[in-house]
Length: 368
Image (cartoon, rainbow, N blue to C red; front, top):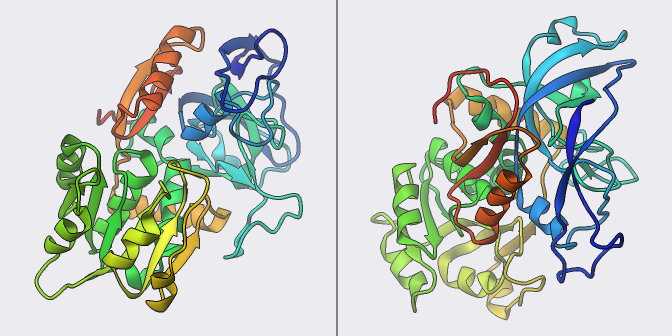
């Protein structure tokens, strides 16, 4: 029987949000079946995201103990349904669109029931921490040929989130040649993808972190500089690093929340944009008067549409971008102890890039 990784309730019942850390278990699942325009993918690697950690802490909506974890995955198509239009999918290595219900509308999902992300919730019955998954042929893209399985697994969710935050929400004119972009909290997957996208578009990119080591690694990826945000007056130090003639930032890509609007007022040009894709510091932010007096736009950003996913993948392929992978665990889905160590890295913010479980036969040229 195929295997999959699930959350397990403690003492047979759910815990209180934020006061629990659910164990993960491996369980057998039914063999995959295919119908209509569906394809079956034999998965070879899956990447973790913070939503997986939040699910273990019961801090994410719709938690389910009956749905495998994981929204990011790569694998090979082994079977196609009778109504699949492109029969050549069979045998190809593909990555999965991590969410459904959102085709191409710029504002949000068209599906009246909302956007459904893979893994661990009642909203979609599929996850990528399993050996096989069945999806519609329209929900995959061919994996970049130059990427290893681990890199390909690391791309979908963070790449899509970063693309929408930078391109759709911050805006193309604020993330192009000559623009100055600040990416906060460098080290996480979304921040690192946003950094690479902005660099490839010709922007001056700067970062913040609590670690000088992470700032140095970001500079190796193309950032012009950065500051430690725990230092007093870090925003003045950051502005001093801008190139001659550039007095302020055009956009801030932020996943923390907290006091970013107060800091943004000091950092941004008039009419600048703060694109917020997460709020890890606090579920609330203060909106200060200086922000509207300076015409600052604060824009919330989520993952993205199917169109944005394709646009992102096309850009990645055209520029041969490699997702940053912090650690790859090459093991089987029986190795619960090993998989738990990846979660430990995420809990303690040790990672610089994505955390990947590689549990199938690897394909692609490894760059790790």
